[in-house]
Image (cartoon, rainbow, N blue to C red; front, side, top):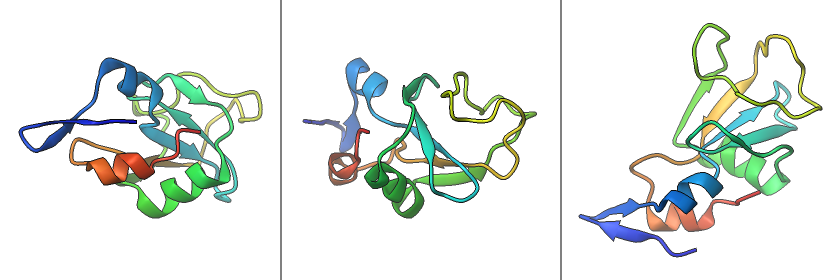
Length: 109
């Protein structure tokens, strides 16, 4: 995937924003997760080991899922619990400072 630079920063197209993982919600054991785009839509219902490893080791930001905040998943895969996701982690795998190299190594699934 090609990424355009604007004033030294990567400028994603609308299609790239829709298709690239932005945040990965990971279970407390760090064995399974789901990926969401920057519009909080579910794009990968069961992430690959490569994306899970990338999220845990190369994330831009990390935080606990908090039910009181509007940061949680809008859609949940069938395997994900329906109640509160206590101890689940959110890993932002890209941000506005992500480089071409970082984005090029980001697994999409």
